[in-house]
Length: 253
Image 1 (cartoon, rainbow, N blue to C red):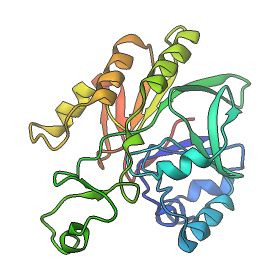
Image 2: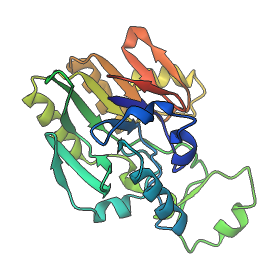
Image 3: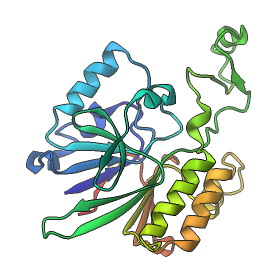
């Protein structure tokens, strides 16, 4: 079984407890819950360690792509492993980060597989007042001002929220190995045309190198369905073969 949900922001206990997600009662470690970015791998605190241990003890295996709210300094420290055809980083024995530009082959009960192209990341849009360095004196002042929208470099914002050219080229090369055909595309951000549609002219969300890259994927790859998070809504765009998830948990197979 594979279930998919949207941004959890580290609040795994609310989203994935037995009352909220009773389907887990019949799941095993060979079944998966996939989080569409903003998983919440943040700072190495006592509470985060406790919550990750709680998640590790769940009957299923947790997978996630990165969002724009992950601690990329910590992710870079983790070793890279091969898993079902693609690269992962293990947070613990049953929580795995699915890296950018990978194609994974996940088995079904009938000995067939489903292929997934993964590409995490997105632009932060709550930074209209800038990215401040940790020693900037404005932090203390602005933290009390609800009109200020800023983040702090290497504390609440990382430039790695957007991909490198190498990651994007690796993704294209991996898709080419599968003749540009996969079952599912898994991202945190939507592609440019859908982002503009969801933004509705407010210009809160602007296109960037990642959304343009994903637009190219949309135009060149044959896929059954695209799943993404980031926008904090639950909505399916049937004509786009795309779904945005937030709190909703859906079963793919």
